[in-house]
Structures are given as C-alpha cells and as structure tokens.
Image (cartoon, rainbow, N blue to C red):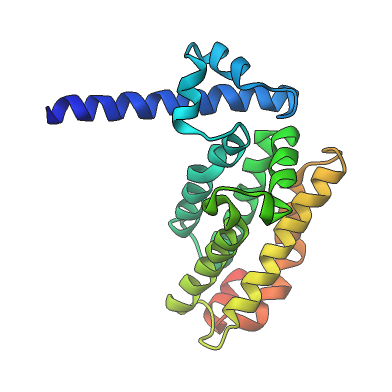
Length: 211
C-alpha cells in the first residue's frame, strides 16, 4: 500500500511538472492572455480537470514555474566557490539570467500579476518580493557569519537596496520590451558599482583579496 501511494505521488509530481513545462513553452510564445487551460492540457495530453487538480486558475502557473528555481539559485549561490563578492554577484547575475531565459512574455505576466498584491490569491506568491529580499539578506548574513563582512554591516538596508536594484532592472528590461540583455545589465552593475557599494563593509582581508 505504501509503495502504491509513493507511485501515485511520483506520478502526480510528474504530471504537474509536465503541465508546468508545457505551459511555460506556450506562454513564452503567446503570453498568458492568449493561452487557454484547454490548450495547455491538450498539448500535455491530459484532461482539463487534471489542470485544476494542481492549479486554481491559469495565472497560478506563472508563479509556480519559478518557485523551485529561485530557491535553487539561492542555494547554489550560498555554496558557490569563492569569497563573498563572488557569491553575491553570482546570485544576482544568475537570478537575472534565469528571468531572461524564461522569456519576456513570462516576465511581463509575472509583473502584471504581482504589482498589485491584492490581486494575488496564493499567499506564497503574495510574499514573493519579501522572499527575494530575505534571500538577499541571507547572502549578506552569511558574509557576516564567515567574517567576510564587518559585524556592524547594515544587513537589512543593504538587502533592501540590492533587491530594489535587481527588481528595478527587471522592470526596466520588461518595459523596454527586452531591448537589451537583463543578465548583461546586471553583470555591468556587479562589475562597476557593486564593489564600491560593498567596500565600506568588507573586512580588510577580503577587501584586499577582491581588489
């Protein structure tokens, strides 16, 4: 019985994964407005009702697509080989690159559905900005714990500022219609401006190491 339940759970996870991957491909091409639940399920080879087993509405797909990936990006950044500045830049650039590779239409749909938190039904999605801010804070706190950053580093203020930067870059990229590379724009920021921003908080050993 236990094995049967495990098989059912695995099958359910696989079905959800297929729905998400199928929806991502269609939304990338057509946008959410021009994508129907029927189109997603038909392309996935399942019944319409199967979709609603996992999602209340098609908008929920946009949020679900990126949840695990952003958590994975954060964990990879925390484990990235190198000093604090390398880890922080890795996190910001990888974050931006993931959004860019998922495509402009998907980003636009996500922005459209999260700018007004009152329109977001899923509490997890309503807290997306806070969660990304917490990830940025986690990156900085790890630097303090490892002695790379000074103990009096203003963790909250820096996390707020860096989250504002990356969200602002995302919105500008979105509004430009993808006229340039979001990932490359973030790389430029990390190369030209991030070192000066963080320099007052780096302990001497790591400051010299980064120069």
